[in-house]
Image 1 (cartoon, rainbow, N blue to C red):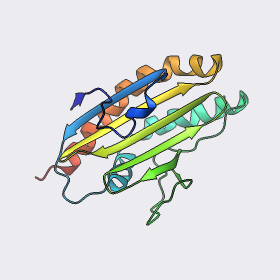
Image 2 (image 1 turned 180 degrees about the horizontal axis):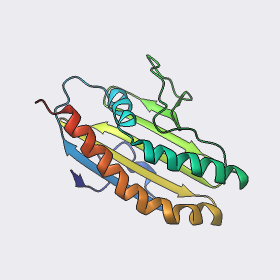
Image 3 (image 1 turned 120 degrees about the horizontal axis):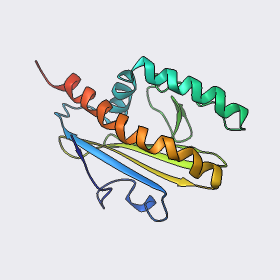
Image 4 (image 1 turned 180 degrees about the vertical axis):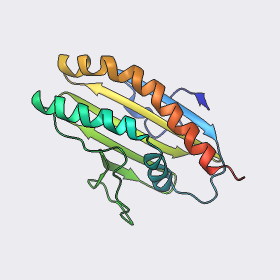
Length: 165
């Protein structure tokens, strides 16, 4: 697993200008016919319960501050063919192809985009965040380091799950 730039081959590359947070990592893993949607579902299934507990605390606290309740990271329905605008867990589908899924959450404080993308036998996860105001920037202060810590670990767990043996 390596941290990589959100380069021209990444589906979120065009979203980088003006972003307040950009992060991507990738790992070599046999694709074995898996779609990006399947990779997202598999990753959501590896989210530890303690992290979903943090999301529950976030949801309760942020609702008091006027932010929406996002739900659970692990609660990704098994919709057969999600379309742009459908909800999958805490995100809304922006784009879904066999090679890449782009998910987003947009509110008055920030716009988050997350992409899981197959690049051959490399699975890449990228995140781009644009904050809209001071509250969004303040919100990202604790979220950015947690994101940089948890996403590579989720990818590592998924790689272990995908490797034969």
